Image 1 (cartoon, helix red, strand yellow):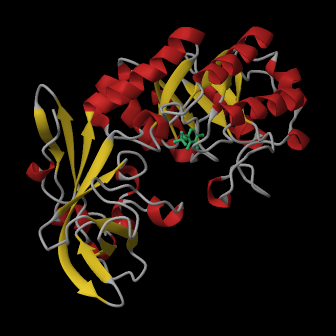
Image 2 (image 1 turned 180 degrees about the vertical axis):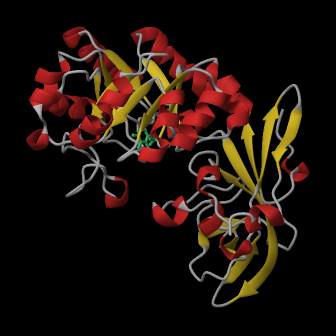
Length: 378
Ligand SMILES: *Cc1c(COP(=O)(O)O)cnc(C)c1O
């Protein structure tokens, strides 16, 4: 069954559960083949109405903050991991309550919180340290944890071999939307630099950025990379993809409000790059639209812009087989990850509704937003 997008309000995100399940099955196959554990990185996708579904396939969540840890704890119920570049002291007791693994970014942080974690009576929390192997293959500094003077992770130079007592694992995160050939080159460096320490650990966390659910992703090399560390050092391996969980599972429905002309035709939409898909401007990237092509590919080319007042709030130039007119709907693809979690109400623009589709129940609107959501944050 095709989703009848004309039944959605606009703007509205919709996640297709069937596509999500396809991704989850692919991820679970990696767990089943290797014995590794895969966690959802909530930073990329926190649509908790599907957490019970995700929890059937993955082992739990990873979090970048107290709030994410709490959400994962309350809504999924698997393992809760957390890493942050620094923890907020007043929040730490609550973090202890929700977390199973806590990863620290520096030896200062580890020293500061070690006693608190180790004195927990009610449960045993495993501790890890994020390392910075100073190797990555990311072109955009904004997304490169190994960029010059990065604050993320301890470099070999700053590693303190005499302060490892009580640490259960090491964590590295150096990838972004990459295939397993990058992982293979990365783990060689990690092994060369930190192998001597990994052998005394219980686990090694490979972070996120693994594009496992992309059609051309090479699963065999991933499996070999996981097995390499597991066999060599007897460690458990964790992966914590965000994007790969929700990749290509969601859409954003938008409506054309007006067409203006200034050297070319420009369509003004009720969706915004700045508010609803900020990675289009940050990354930057060009989302696909159903039944639209590159400029000039079809007969009618338009620039698509938003109804905010930000001059650069432009999604891109696209061509269509029919002229656009006010009221027409455009369906943007791959809009589940790094969208809802990054939304904002800049310009007083309405947040998109959030919907879910499955065969059994059809379209369900999970959330709609209004004036109070704008006002309550200001
Ligand atoms: C962002 C992040 C992830 C998830 O990355 P994706 O690119 O969404 O797979 C995992 N771990 C850490 C530490 C992160 O910062």
